Image 1 (cartoon, rainbow, N blue to C red):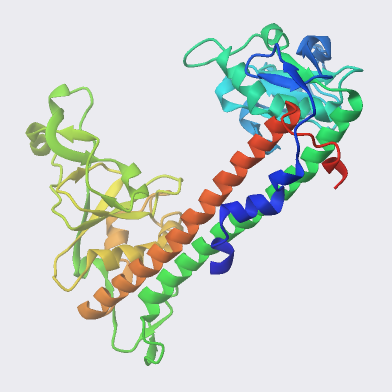
Image 2: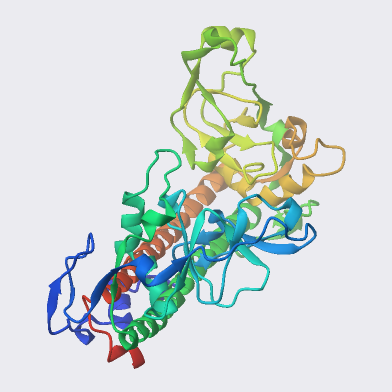
Length: 461
């Protein structure tokens, strides 16, 4: 695992497509296309509308109301992955923008919210596939290879012009007629096919490496979770005598450990949200936190502040650090997540605090235990007699946890922190490799479709 994560980006790039394989074309001329300085001398510059049709087909409003269709909205498409998902509707229930029909080989590109850069090739669509009117559907004409059309439209050179020519601040859009007025480089058909084949092969190799790195990140996350769970339930001594904890999610623990309910070693409580209709409650001096903070490793500052009046009249708890904060409501992932509180603060009703009442209880250790108890807490709060989708303070206080002596808590925290530092470094490296590969992928596409590199011989390599 370590060896895989340590491969330098430069070696990956060299492995994929060494630049020495690609030479420039023998002769270039100035291009009339914005953002493209020069193209091979024998290539043409043409507005997209001269070589492709746009929005040629649509579903009629008289379509059978019971007709079932597969719908693609802008949120279902990404620049790199293409169409990532579809939604199924009967025609009468479908959004009014579900009207654009597509054919095999078409390319779709978003004309609204263009900053999302939603571009996809439609290779083998089902007959009932329909895309949003927020897309321009481009169909290659006789002088354009459909696969090359997709790569041109996907290139940074084209996408950046679409974004630049969009109007509007919160909902930028480009008129389809303005989009198809944009020029593209048009090589001879045989070269278009060679470029498309080359890019299909090279991007597939890049995508395979990205998938390996993404899988490595998943494995590192699994290892991190397993490491924490083992440390807080089994300890660090592999030869320790064990006993049954009597708690399913904990299993066996070292014989000299206790299994104790949180309420016996810590205070548990939660807060509230002062009325927004009383401005005197807000913009004061005391930190007030909402459940989004559980996404942080620790809390050292607050976005919102409340006043002394809010503290008094709303009976907000003043929580002194160190403490643990736990998300306790909602169906999202924050329910059951925990973070460390490093500042004096108060909280809303979607958080609970755990503040040790004994010096033998380390908040860092408790936080690691709660990380291991995440799925248990969520399951417990989704059924039985509890409020559905919520962890009560009573439940949290009554949760039994492994409780080693204070010295072992410290050792376990140090061990976990050291291990997490190493695993996080490997994860960060893998994410950096993925970012570099995506950059390389984009650069390769742009270089090929603008003729910066001659890939005609490499197209069949």
